[in-house]
Image 1 (cartoon, one colour):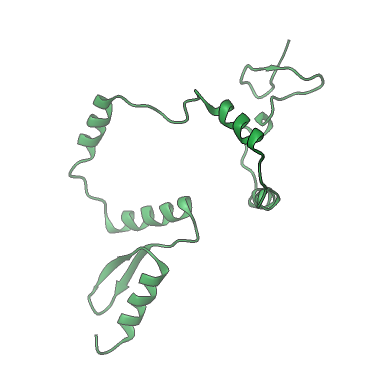
Image 2: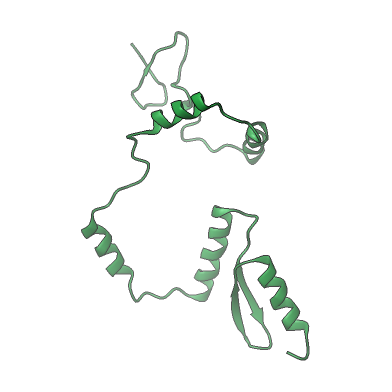
Length: 139
């Protein structure tokens, strides 16, 4: 019996293999170029009904997220109540969220000299409107 070299402890069934499928990359960061090439290769690819069903079956019963008890969730919620983030921290969280969700959609803060404060925007349309309002002398 030969075990996967990544350290997961799973048995390798195929002769001459060193890793269980997908475990070769475990713990490694793939380059942006490599990720882009994989995305281009898979773009527009249609999976058969049989393939989708097989993938669905393989995912059933697997815990994809940490399940917390109701009491734990309540304690976490209570611990965060009343806390305020600084403006700089809110900006950083906004940037981080944009990069994590989808870089095509933008949101952030626009500093208005007229109002002398930062204004939060959630789309490029809102940002261009804020810029237009800032330039217009009648507003």
